[in-house]
Image 1 (cartoon, rainbow, N blue to C red):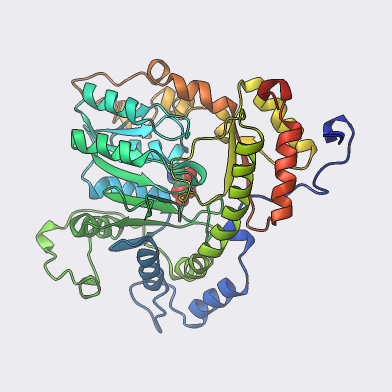
Image 2 (cartoon, helix red, strand yellow; image 1 turned 180 degrees about the horizontal axis):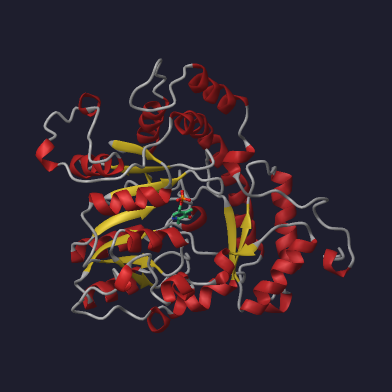
Length: 425
Ligand SMILES: *Cc1c(COP(=O)(O)O)cnc(C)c1O
């Protein structure tokens, strides 16, 4: 107390706006430059043959598999490509429905539509992740839903035990879209390895990055073979590398090209090596803020965290009482030079025209025109909590460059700016 808020003319807590996002890009430097230079000087930018191969993609895949403790990892061009590959590895397409969370990035549901299946939106809980109770309800009502895509948003795991139990109960396959949470875990296991297939993004806005890039991971050799084939024109190379000598050419099918370039592999190898330190730094600031807020302002509602040890700490999020209070809070923080925002403008994905109007690139409203036995659920009626929570959940990014003192300032900022009548603090 005692200090004048910046929005009332006081001195801002932070002298300059704080850079919070792009953790991987923020720590990019000479290591990545040297690795890219290796590829250029060896004149071997392609992963499967070259003049003097550096095997950067292969090393990256091996390191990623080791880091995640998963059997197989495949580098691809993006997480959207990885989602597409995962859906095709699972043989999902026209005539199938796939459950997706009501609140996620365009790509999660967009890949489903592009793969020829129809997304069914599932409501969220106070972790801002998929709600297992609504998943159970929708799977029990519609046996045309063949798979579920679980999305841990901005570093927090979802209610995985409950979600996986529901998926098992109905025999649906599980894809984990870990684009925003590389390195996060649940019960000691890395996200992306708990379901059938996990997918990752290395686009600029994610944890670690090469500008673009993605990965598919799985423990299932058959799904892996199908993933490799779909990402490489139906071909499966490197049988010896994986010890998969029984791969049958009679199982080949038409695919596309989502192969990762050696330049991307080179950068990603270095970025992955930096990931544990990035997470360690963000986590220490996140945990400081999280525990202090719980203790000093027990009435503030923090985003629910299902595994204290599982977050990577890239964001602190508060669920405010109303959208108006959320806006007031964001403006107050901005005056203190603390960045914060509503994810996806606080809008559930099903309210975007692309999904609200069921638009695809295809003729005849494909794939929505499939003669399903059960009507496609109307999320406006069936996802009330997404509609309620999204516009009042405020996300505050944590930079790997933040010190403990920055963490203390963030706590002071949050406590002094938060509209006090809303929290009795
Ligand atoms: C960013 C993102 C994607 C898409 O990743 P790209 O690598 O840009 O294709 C998919 N899902 C989620 C949840 C994302 O945040």
